[in-house]
Amino acid sequence: MRHALESVVAQGGGKSAYIDGYRIGGKTGTAQKVENGRYLVGNYIMSFMAVLPANNPEVVLYLAIDNPKNTALLSSYTTTPIARRILLDIIDALGIEKQEGGLEKDLEWTDKILYNVPNVEGLSVKEAKKLLVNFNIEYTGTGEVVVSQSPEAGEKLEDRGTVRLLIE
Image: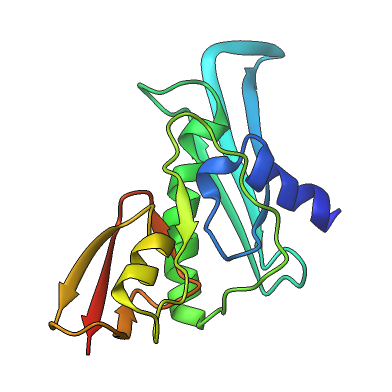
């Protein structure tokens, strides 16, 4: 069940709640409201339930919006972006660590491509340039060997993001 919930966030309708490096499980919900035995036209409750981390839950979040206005009538568009912001605050407040082994997000055309930053410390500038082909590079120093880098190796950075190198 936890795997199924994680797949909703990584590959299904909950993608807007996805946070790289954190195993989040969730389920969206859209319920048409009833009054006097009849469905109300255009009157819905949008909801999203999330667990974090999905493989060993410490947090359960339930978010519901009663009759949202001026939005698509799908919970994946209304509740999941809000839930993501709340989950980011929870991660910070509780000090929840990133994990490996989670499902990768299925990219959509609006998603930015992320690359892992390689370790270029100790390499020549020429060797570092070859490995950092997907990034912009800023240099500090005038030597030939990379002493340190930011962001650190293993971090994810957007395509054409900037890697700063301190040169010996």
